[in-house]
Amino acid sequence: MRTYTDIRPTFPDRSTWTTPHVLAHRAASHGDAVYLDCPEEGLTWTFAETHESARRVAGTLMASGGAPGDRLLVMLPNSSMFIRTWLGSQVAGMVEVPINTAYRGQFLEHQASTVGPKLAVIDSACAERFVESKSACESIERFWVAGSGADAGIAALRDAGWEAEPWDALEASEPTEPVGVAPHDLASIFFTSGTTGPSKGVMMPQAQMYFFADECVSLTRLTDADTYMVTTPLFHGNAQFLAAYPALVAGARFVLHSHFSASRWIDQIRDSKATVTNFLGVMMDFVWKQEARPNDADNSLRCIFAAPTAYSILDEFKARFGVDAFVEVFGLTETSMPILSPYGEDRPVGAAGLAASDWFDVRLVDPETDEEVGIGELGELAIRTKVPWTCSMGYYAMPDKTAEAWRNLWFHTGDGLRRDAEGWYYFVDRLKDALRRRGENISSYEVEQALLGHPDITECAVVAVKADIEAGEDEVMAWIIASAPLDLGELWAWAETRMPSFAVPRFIEIVDDLPKTPSERVQKIKLREQGATATTHDRADYMRVI
Figure 1 (tube, rainbow, N blue to C red):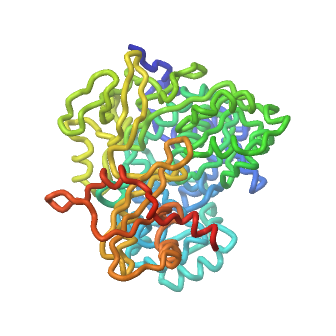
Figure 2: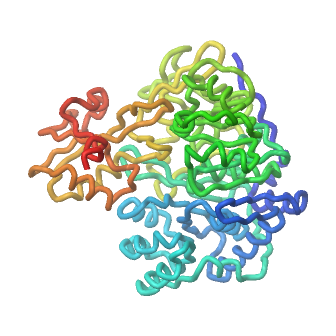
Figure 3: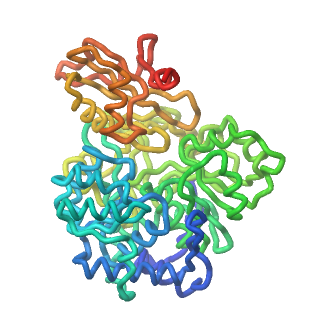
């Protein structure tokens, strides 16, 4: 049975698997080479300049009371400030907590109150949200605010009783020496979707952040001759530890765009001379649907890391854009990437990759008994790492959820896969109630809690229904029991003010009751099987009408 054998750490000594070490090493080895390139800002930073900026940011964080282990909340859009804040937090030994810039209300309050950040770096557009949710953010002592409306954001925060300064003040300190951090020290907390509860903060040690990134270096064959271009948001791991950090590890140039644009994508690839980039969710499909141009293949791109790959257009996409290789993985924030596809190899349709068995134990098990299933059978993916500190340390402040997920000393992903006789793994379906839409993981529980805040909604259930596009995407559907007639237009507008736009249900079904077990748990499997029907209200139809 085949396995994935291409992982060869760039830094063989595991005692050096920390962000401050990698950053300092690259500043010494590639100091004058450009690391960070932000076209919308019109600025670049060499490895040496990035290192100095991170040390200045670290000095200010430490002078402001930040100590090793303290949490730093980061709520910024893609920008050089995000990268320098992240790296500065690592030099200071603090724990970076990236928050989705779309979050507000209960979504923001849950994550802020769970981790109890001491300091925060945010975009000016987010300032009022913290003021509105002040009681849940009372652990924060000081803000630094970026963005064109920074002055107004600072004023709002100060009026609410917080200390606040512009982002540039973070670089005011003299460069400080790194706080000594070890591979087992906590580096970051990335929140992932909840299923029967709120989203969970995944505790990622320094060594896991490094290993995740170096897996990507091996996966894409990244070197210091490459340019890695990204348009996905840095508050997700896909851009941070699967693009920005791999470029740092390899000594490559990292080009960061503010956002994804399907119509501009090929021009950005060509202008940046990108050799590697990534696609998340439906991005590949959106790019493909743009009108073809005679010069689409006139670019430097050799590899696309697509999660997942849209196989129905794969060969035509490669030919149209002149791409040599598509690579794919199956991984989670909790586990790094235990399943990867060999570079440049044609794989069976739908296959995510082979097990990296030198680094992980990988099993497909019956979710009820944990007994291993046979070849070709659907089973829950369960993972166990073979090397210390290359997977998550658990969920922050959620010991019960940690114990539940790491049942029988294996991490249970909640995802259903099958494996063929040759060793290829195929994603089949989610076994849990989490959803994925437009590249965003969504907690069904948190959407339900937000909807229940409506005065006329007495009960609801939210599930994923299949989207009408390839790439494993979901649409959000809510079954609602109401105490009074609902104006659906008003309900969707109301929901927009209380949850991220990507989490607002597209489909709504008004019902008199919900299918339940004898213990009164909603049988969501029945709702998923039913899906949208002729009586379902589709927000897309409503938007077309108005």
